[in-house]
Length: 137
Length: 436
Image: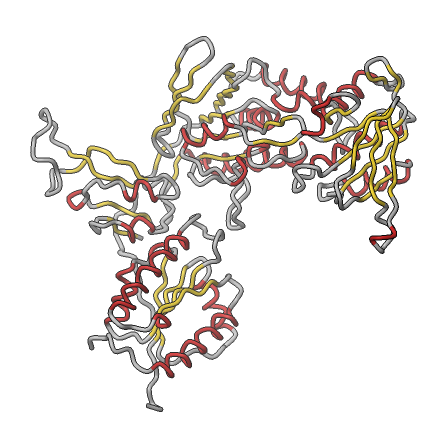
């Protein structure tokens, strides 16, 4: 089990998550090794299906980096995302997946440190949880 | 490492022609300033004013806080320059009945008080409808308790003579601030401005406030001037008690300079007049306008977006701008700088006469669209409408409609789309794609 490196899929809103990622890269902060990034124009672009598909096709955890509420460039994208993530979590509980595998994290453009810290924490948490049993790979 | 959710498309969206025509809702000082500046640039401006005279809320004002000019005279000059401008057309008693289309194809139906209806096709719409006030509750008993606009009028009428109210001389005046609208600085600005003028007339002035708000440009200096001229400022925690005495009105507050609460004594200010600022209220007409124009109304009936990502004067729809009191009740100087910001934005939009969509833009695939209106309801920028432009698809109703060959489908207007992808994610038929 010690060699298990969880795969994290991170959806990044281009308004906040992506600049935060760029900042984290510039600062050469530590990131989990097994990370896949999906930039989206707004967190409201992310469908419920995207979140579940990611888990199905090999991710151990899914993280969505969105803007703070009432801070969305497109007014209510992150509010939409919240309800979709809630719905996805309901489905995950029904099929027996842990809710911790899916999480929204609100960042601002300048929170590169927070960005990397959260991802490292998430990787530790997933390492404890073990591999995602729902994946078909 | 990256994956992308965009689909690329070789054909760029067609540029949209914009002719230099602007509709301004509201003929207050903000609307008039925008009109004057734009007309100078050769833009055809139509001002739709709901009343019969121009001027709006500024008709109640007589003094600027930051310059010596008289507001009414300044506004008279502004109105006469507007009348001399050939590019400006003023519709009085006007009401916006409909606003269809998107940037570049706006169709506005305006009805004037004489029953005439006219259709305008502006390239941009500026909303500057201002705000409304109602008398503060404490003023309801009437005697010796007046609003700040009435005080403004008294001051303007008495010019160089001593101040009188209903024939009686006024020697002492107390301002009570922050009873309502604790988040708005207009009352502080008005009170300090009037207090300085009152001191020059030889009155004794006290200002009772919870917090003085000096965040407008130059107000701190004015506050210092007022202190130097001998205006008394008191702070309160508990709302002051106002009671009528034989020949005056007394305001009782507890002395906040004593630190221990139980040792505080009551200070009583006996004065001839008490001034209480009016309460700012939501304007039902502005809310109606929001419905017609598909704008998002913010909290408290004002149009301000509580969102730091937004420029002050931007609305949720491209081509519609907000300025002045309808955004948030504010002092004239700030309203005017918003007016100038709107002018810059409109000029930037109309420059070159074409608008080319730049963002990633969503597009509906008509054969897949079931016309469920989900995207129409969800689009935060009101960029989606249902139009007859698609071929018949599996969702279409079975009967042919009187020879019509085109069927309804949702259509995203590329000029109005901001490219957020909310509709793409929500479409149950997966008929919408985001193209870059």
